[in-house]
Image (cartoon, rainbow, N blue to C red):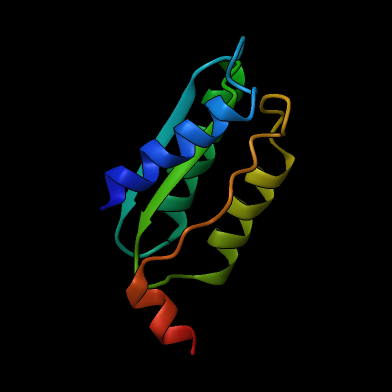
Amino acid sequence: MNNRLLWLAVLLLMLSGVAADAGPVHVIGVKGMIEPAVANYIIRGIARAEDESAEAVVIKLDTHGGLYEPMRGVVYAAGTAGLGKTNGSLPIQFPQQAMRLMD
């Protein structure tokens, strides 16, 4: 299921015309709690994507949560990244389990 979401995100980029003459789309996979070392891994991945002129970064998270400050750093890095024509922003897709928890 997760691979289908990834390919859907890539397909949406292509259909929107963004990927016509664009750089690569980087994928950062994380499984486990968001803590400082994991946040640094994600932030370094975002910086690498910028350095390599990526069009976007897809962050695949399989987590039950984590610490506020490290995640705040990730959100800041993602929001200020100079990626592609759309600033690398993609919609967030939550798994069904997470959606039930939000009700």
